[in-house]
Length: 253
Image (tube, rainbow, N blue to C red; front, side, top):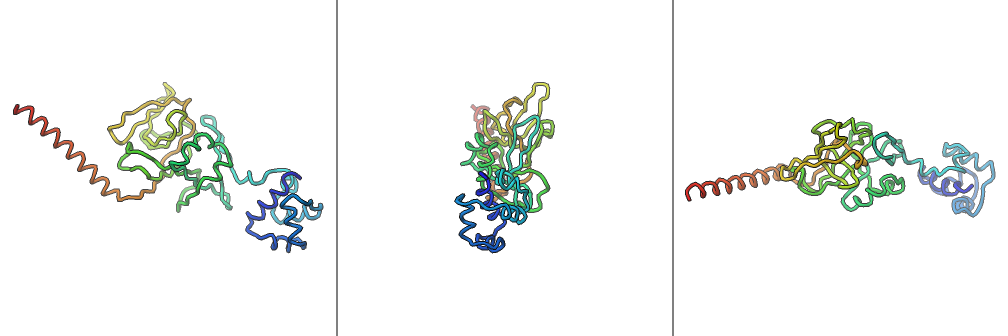
């Protein structure tokens, strides 16, 4: 019963009951239950059956399978890699947050259920059914969406689902995590990624370099976006004024 002891502790914690409460249901001493969880003692068949009934799992799963891993769902698709996600007690997908500090680890370990389990979780009200993840974006390539903004995205299972001109988080082998507008070039088997900030040139990513695609759903901003837009307008007006002054200087020279 190599999995029984860890499964017992996991199921008890998941159900939110103490060792004393469970031992009372089983009509045994708490110390005996503690010995089961530590792997220092083995229950008889009657106790195993009773535990399976309490936690509503099969007897075979209780003693043979790692039930903690059943907290994870795996999405498989033809185009992209296997995706590990976590679910809550109601079997709804959590929204895991990949912040700047977690980006490097995410690129290496996104398929590892243990890694995904340890990512922080965020909650978003009234969100449609689906698989979502939050990404912290960096830089000013997508202004007025500024650095530090959390972008909530839904998982795209196939490249063919991409809608031209929409914004996506693309997870690639070469560029890491990028948030861009996207156009698909099926003939060349590549994506054209371009920024809202015109100072950043578009670039091409081949299909073979893509690991995951997440479509924008919503975002969480932590600053006054109106003030940010006003600042951008002021900067552009100042730049235009400088160019006009330079042209005027050349004309009268």
